[in-house]
Image 1: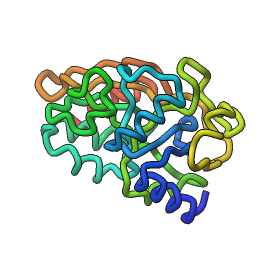
Image 2 (image 1 turned 60 degrees about the vertical axis):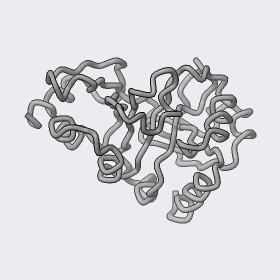
Image 3 (image 1 turned 30 degrees about the vertical axis):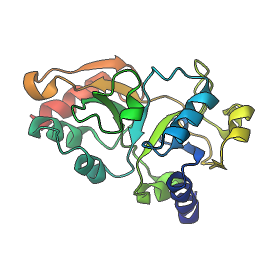
Amino acid sequence: MTAEDAQTFARCMRVHGVAVFPADTVYGLACEPNAPEAVERLYRLKGRSRGKPAAVMFFDRELALAALPELGERTRAALLALLPDALTVLLPNPAARFALAGGSDPTTLGLRVPKLSGDLGPLADVRWPVLQSSANRAGGPDPRRIEDVPEELRRGVDLVLDGGELPGTPSTVIDLRDYEERGTWSVIRDGAVPAAELARRLDQAG
């Protein structure tokens, strides 16, 4: 992965293309989150129902926080403690930002800010948020190598970025929708970050 690769990826997003790219967990599909035709194409490639949500990934935590001004102080403190990492954080989204990613519930936003280092480090300079989902057919295994991405997906996208072999464990999904008012949270899907580690960080965040 080079700086030029990251720039090509950003350009692909700006022109409403669809790309296969490496994240800190598994390979994903990405597109511009506010472009209906690109989102529809991504879902069609996956064979995924439009009623099911996807996540919006920012490659910089501060950009993510700036894009969600409605978040309360307590939730922002939690995000500072949790991100970046191999997490998908479910957040309240009363303004229905990035509504195309919400599936049947645009008032909930799934947020990703990956921890990018080593070979994937150049992606951290991408300033463009993306709608993303794992680069598999709906219900299929999560791909840790580019050759694990189904061939029909690789043929159907505009750009394929090879980041080598990835960890292969999907992100942990944590629900913070009630965190601001009640201080409660739950793990919706076990994944790369253990629940005990989440509890430790949130305790420290107060």
